[in-house]
Image (tube, rainbow, N blue to C red; front, top):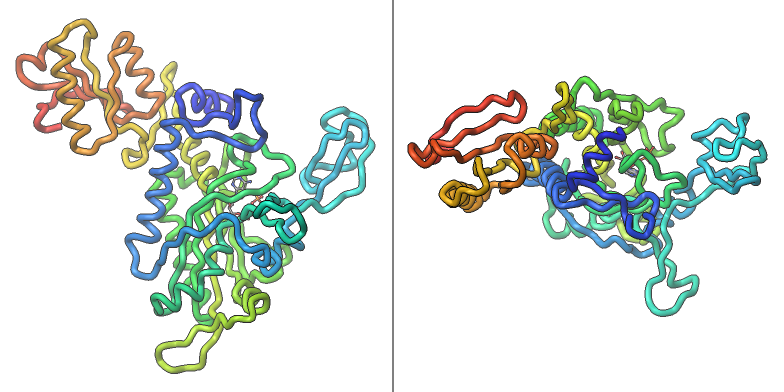
Length: 418
Ligand code: ATP
């Protein structure tokens, strides 16, 4: 884990948030390669779930919502974790994550406070006056922006059931102890689907979504052998959920939740009906009686997907370290390099190849620093699938060498056939 974190920082994938001021716990900044990776993961998701289907509608809703949203959803009352404090050193922990029979892991004394419930929503103030009426929250999930637009989508599009509404965006949780790199952050990115179904068919639709989730995880190259389905026992499910499956992954920190799939019945839409006084009923086109649809929710976290991808692709082969990204996700697709730096004819030929690939819309990087071995080592650490080198033979027959990241084999290819 330490090696991956260090590579991410060194090579410009992920930096600690506000590092220059000593950091801010639970926040992370994506560098040039990290943002490219993240956008490619989010792009693959959007293409898979929204663009390639007729039954999905994309939205992008506000982060700050009317506070009644969180009263209706139950977050205001119950979105909390149990907090415990060591009265000696004032370190705080999640009471469900440590054994209170033991001494404080920070100072070694045993003097625990009572357990208190700590609400994880970030508060903010809307408008110039700070009073009870101006308090709002940064959304702790993207789902409520979807539910509150259910009626708008029906009115604008009148889709057939089943249909889904999808959203990607930031979510904020004031986690008591952010930890394990980006795994538990205070600001992170979610990708959520609310799939509205006729309650008579929920089981079939649940199974279909579960199969599609596995298809998506495969598409982004996550190691299948490390993925596990945890059927959450009925006694541990949220009271409104009739079935929840946590998709877990063998992270380097242990087996933990990667994403969730939950059948949430009509809990959310009924809550909105109660709080807003507006009907959330769907009128079937065949003239049968209107009803409030039920919902199945696949909920993905981008940071955890990125951690699962990094865990999968991080490869050590003797002294060689490389990131075995699938070609569709690699932040840089080709490296273009002149064999020698001080030969103008090589440089100008290499520039031509570089510009040609750029023009074609490829993600291409230029490198003429150090020697070729060092350039390959750097390209491997970034996970560039192919390195193209322009040498003296190129000037004679217009061929270049293409080196494969995974096998390190080199082949000669005509520039026109690249
Ligand atoms: P956990 O039990 O690990 O706290 P959760 O059950 O609270 O997770 P959900 O509320 O189901 O998580 O959120 C859906 C998804 O959002 C999670 O599966 C995860 O991928 C992501 N997620 C939740 N909290 C965080 C966080 N603090 N940092 C990064 N990703 C998160």
